[in-house]
Amino acid sequence: MHLVAPSLLSADFTRLGEDIEMVNRSEADWFHVDVMDGVFVPNISFGMPVIKAIGKVARKPLDVHLMIVQPERYFETFRDLGVSWLSIHYEAVQHLHRAVFQIRELGMKAGVVLNPHTPVHVLEDIIADVDLVLLMSVNPGFGGQKFIEQTYSKISKLRLMIEQANSPALIEVDGGVSLDNAGKLLSAGADVLVAGNTVFSSKDPLDTIHQLKGMGS
Ligand code: DX5
Ligand code: ZN
Image 1: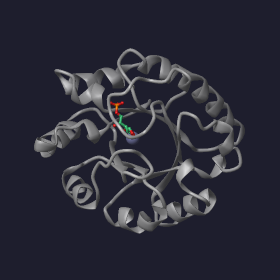
Image 2 (image 1 turned 30 degrees about the vertical axis):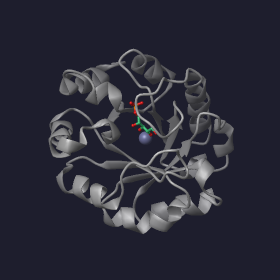
Image 3 (image 1 turned 90 degrees about the horizontal axis):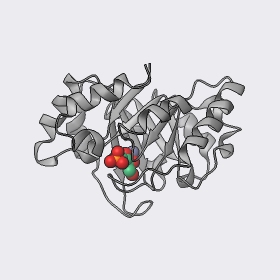
């Protein structure tokens, strides 16, 4: 069964507690939490005090997507904030292998994120050691963007690579995921669907999450 991770970037920050409670009550599996530094991406989202507050009320694992330069500086901090899944961009680190092992040694699951232009084959020699690969299906930085169609073939290639390496890695897709493309993403081999706008801009977010969970089954 696939997982659904609503992205809090699209939540209403004037009533964040209520939106978190909605996700708690829903069939969603994780909270997707986007951290942006205004350097790696052209936007700034939120930082540690907000994530600490989220962690106090969230009753599902925090899936943190770091869109920051030199993410290694904060691995311990995120562990202390109770983060379960910590993902770093391939494009943001010099020593990916070391960084992945640091995350795992701190007791978190390690994810690697690829921008739309980065081919999946760059992960060939590390795929056996990562817990998750997050494929960006938009350029990172903003919610509500248009899904990039090339993502389907990236998922299929990555699925093959994961099987050949006998890797435990889950495939997560982030950006422009909707009720229209979710089924096709799952057929291509996705395990985790991130959805921001689709969930939080819908009239009935609980039902939208229910529909996303029911896809492909
Ligand atoms: C974009 C973020 C996404 C974003 C997705 O940089 O990584 O997680 O919240 O938003 P939607 O689902 O609206 O494209
Ligand atoms: Zn994200």
